[in-house]
Length: 234
Ligand SMILES: *Cc1c(COP(=O)(O)O)cnc(C)c1O
View 1 (cartoon, rainbow, N blue to C red):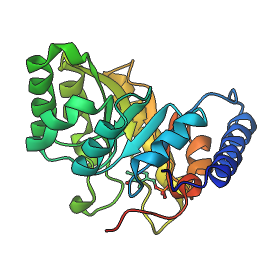
View 2: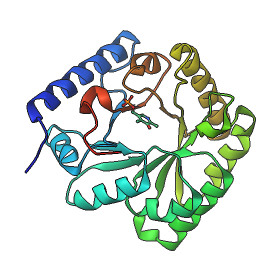
View 3: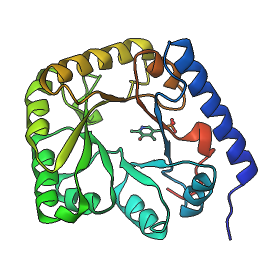
View 4: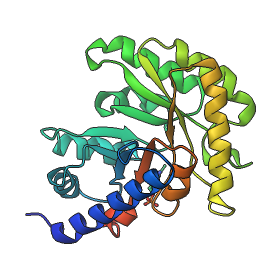
């Protein structure tokens, strides 16, 4: 039995979709110019099912164990799984088994581990990967420092079992998200000078997606404004 309030969920989803379309058109972009990834962390598999019933095609998860279990419960659904959390290299092969995209690539060892996992399982096809940029001075936040962008971009471009999609970032909690997203746009330019096809920009969460759209975001990772409060313990 599902514990999801599907009417309320559909209303929140419709409202966010409308705000996304409005922000895109007011920035001179087509209303469907960005991919909405609904972040389903802390929520059970029945929420993913309800979202798919509402036409959602992309979901995001940030912890391997939770994501793997949920994906297994939802294996019959036509939905793309985006891994958006910090990822240890020793979990790369396991994540590659179910993920269609990894947004949090931020170390050479992780590129190598994802690449090797792809060589060992060619049936999974190319894995879409985003280079995560750290917009803070705090290395524990995940993402590469500005100075490491070129070497990482070259490495991701050369990895044959990965498709280098573009950049990803989380705006710092303090500070103006518009400035943070301007920095992401500059990181994207730098990446495209090395990998012209890596045009995607994964940026924007529940409270700042309009600012991210204004700075060119193509992939929005939105959780609580659609899903409501967490339902899983922990
Ligand atoms: C949780 C999470 C999101 C979604 O955050 P909300 O504020 O719930 O929209 C986006 N990106 C990452 C990396 C996350 O961990």
